[in-house]
Image 1 (tube, rainbow, N blue to C red):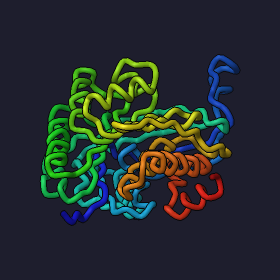
Image 2: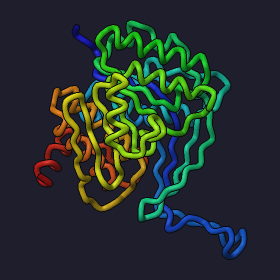
Image 3: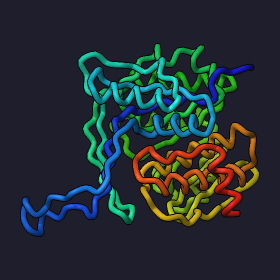
Length: 319
């Protein structure tokens, strides 16, 4: 089947504010006045894991669309404009009248330690934004577990989209996340795993899903649950990638840190793009590690998502 989209990403739409700070405030030293911190650099733009992956895939050269919810406010307008400027289709973006857009503020020190402050806004995604024909128009559907725990109606719409995708031969990728909004809906994330072809947890999320501390054991459990490819990011140690017949670990590339924010989303973009190129497991992991390394070298939340030529050149230089 000829599909119009390479990837349809579904999840949160945030306006991200990223700031480089020399340190995090210490309110126990110097009192309230002494706790203030002056930033050294600032970036503002669209964010959220699914939005970042859509932008990352578009930057690599894939045709990408994003489905999420924003408010009809100034941050929402800036989010939508930023996504479109990044080459992402926002035709099914849900704009909620009279509602606020989520705002995520990130303060990061030069050593990569960052703190989030989030003001949640509109996240409800109605089913018409994920109509069957639109889902079937993509080669790959990417979903974040965070939005699966938003509310029952959004969760139902996304699970239906995942089932539709799988029944239609669309590859389903899931980033399970660990910041689940409603503990009562935790079981829905486990249900989503049953509709998943590629799962992309970090080590903590893999343990949260399976109860296994060792990444290899967690990967084995997820494969046994029916997932086709498991990719566990291991921070500075690189990643583990596993399929039915093999399991590989690749170390991370050593690069100067500009910002660790968004590195996981760059990794996911790289791995999924490589998958669409039908590259093998080692090639997928290497491409993803390279995309993350390039992103880490650039300050900001979504800045530094690389193009495919940048990744290929990086891999040649760091073979």
